[in-house]
Amino acid sequence: MKKVLSQKEINAILGKASRPHTDSGRDRRTVELCDFRNSGQLSEQHARTMKSLYEEFARSLSNSLGAYVRDKVDSDGEKKLIRTVRSVGYMLADE
Image (cartoon, rainbow, N blue to C red; front, side, top):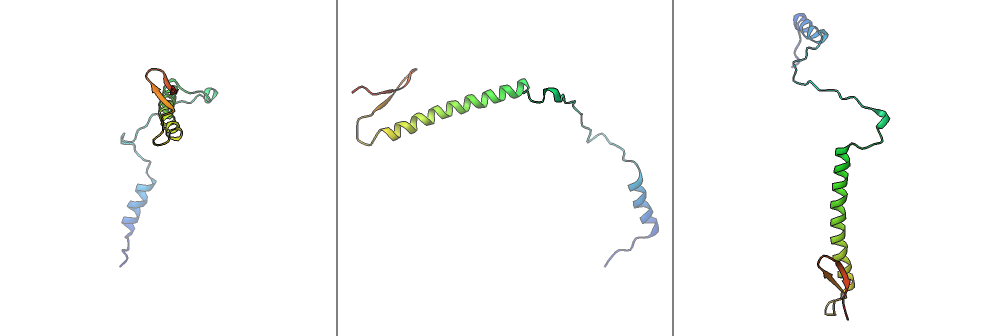
């Protein structure tokens, strides 16, 4: 069953809609100015974040690549062709 609104209820609804919105302070946001002349440059914080991500990626890639190459080069049961030397990296094994 549909509810029929009285004229008083309609006026109350329209009155609320036409009144200016009063801000209660809950959704107050700050506006930051943007300098579009330097828009192509990274901030120091973003540059540090990008450097950290790059270093972590490079470290992970070097570990994965060494394991991948060692796995592809060395066959099961054969003498190892690549060996890991501490503080140096990977070297061909001495024959």
